[in-house]
Image (tube, rainbow, N blue to C red; front, side, top):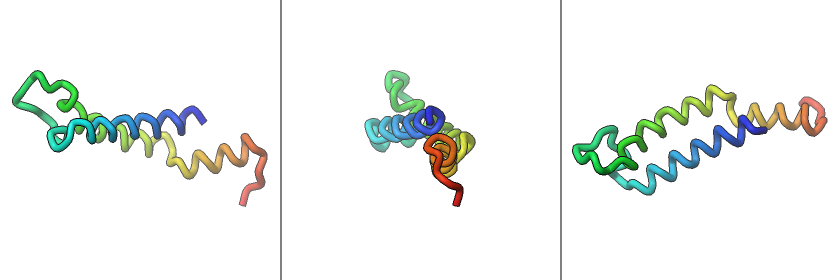
Length: 75
C-alpha cells in the first residue's frame, strides 16, 4: 500500500509543480538561474511517471492489496 501511495503521491506533486510554474515549467532549462522551482519541474515529472510504472501499475497494486490484504478471492 505504501508503494502505491508513494508513487502516486510523487506523481501528483510533480504535476502540481508543473502547474505552479506554468508554461515555463515545461522547459528543461532556463536562461534565468533564479528560477530554481521551474528548472527541475519538467525533468522531475519525466522521471516520476516511468518510476510509477516501474513500481507496478496502480491497478496491479490494488489487485494485490485486495487479494492479500483484504482476503478477497482472485477473479
